[in-house]
Image (tube, helix red, strand yellow):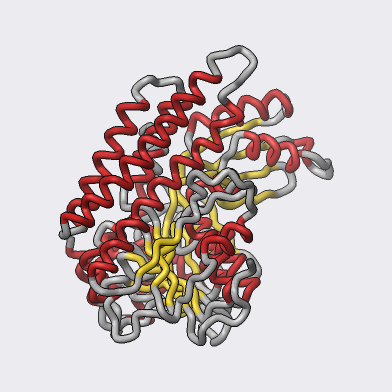
Amino acid sequence: MPLPNDPAPGLTVEKIGGTCMSRSVELLPALFLRDAPYGRIFVVSAYGGITNLLLEHKKSGAPGVYARFAAGDEDWQAALEETGATMRQIHGDILSDPEDRARADAFVDERIEGARSCMVDLQSLCSYGHFRIAPQLMTLRELLSGLGEAHSAFVTTLLLQRQGLAARFVDLTGWRDDSHRDLKERLALGLEGVDPARELPIVTGYAQCSEGLMREFDRGYSEVVFARLAARLGAREAIIHKEFHLSSADPKLVGDKVVKIGHTTYDVADQLSNLGMEAIHPSAAKILRQAEVPLRVRNAFEPADPGTFIGPEAPVGARVQMVTGLDVYAFEVFEPDMVGAKGYDAAILEVLTRHDIWIVSKTSNANCITHWLNGSLSSIRRAERDLAQRLPNAEITTRALSLVSVVGADMAGLSVTRRALNALADAAIPTVAMQQGTRRVDAQFMVPREAKDSAIKALHRELVEARHGDVPAVPELARVAAE
């Protein structure tokens, strides 16, 4: 059954991240218990830290249940039980009613035991020589990741129902569903019979589908589900609730001088995603942009603040909106015979793609191509060895640096490059390289790693604070800066 083509006027689709989900009791008055609570659909992430336990730690790489199982580590069962215990502890702190706690406990027990049985059967099947476990690992990764979103959505539904709201649990994880549906069909089935004007749908951020969301988007899948839902329903706005404002820099770094961005474009959002700022996954931004659904990023704990609007409706004006940085490796291929020859760039890209290394940016001249990479040094070293075999006459070097980027929707006429270089020179920070594209949405400065924080402060002071010196700090940002 297709989703309604004419949703209720003013319908919004809203996503809540894992950190905010873990503080859902605090969010009750600010986000859920409103004079007009309906006309909204919420897509929720797993509680903070749960997906790390189920898969692997996103930043440190510490193995979770999936990583242990894939590596043949027999401790995966203990890790799964520990994850279930952590889930029960989390909802035990959130739910105050004993009956609700019992229902949530039963829900977790059923899902954890179901996953365990599936993994034991898979392990047993693959003990026979005719079967291999590797082709099933991505399916298992999808199954495990869905446990976290199902848990948070179910518990949130119980919490809101206890507050008197007509909340409805919408499970898109395909649990015990043997049908093979694509994402469009999965969304249609999940929302069949749902009336957002009279009830509050709480939707899992993971959706099981034939496309395999994790295969293409990995842990950005919840934002893709959120964007697809907003686009399909023709939402008035897509809203992401975070624990902070989208601001001009990290408040823990530059203090109360940060400024809330307020309004920007999808182009800027793409640049921030490329730099790991996670305003929104680039694929999700593309879906919303093509559907002409504007995005708003709000501070979940400041309901009166409109947050930052991302869309094309109003001109942003020429200004720098953010200064941020990312540790990178300069992967440089120098070959004197490169001049006028073809194929070097393609060979480098093929090797980097095969080793799944993220290319943040690149630059080239007559005989040298440099890619600025974000990834593990071990992976980059493997790529370096492979490329050396393909290009035996090339000189290949890898150097640890930091990329500091100045971003804005329209920076034409601001003399960003000149002012930035002067500010870095005044702060005695050496600039290893720099580049700015013709679209004037960002300017990138490569500096020594130990100088990254100092470079961000210097550029923020010159390009943001000089313009906003009389603008009061955003209260929540000032609080974060003080912590």
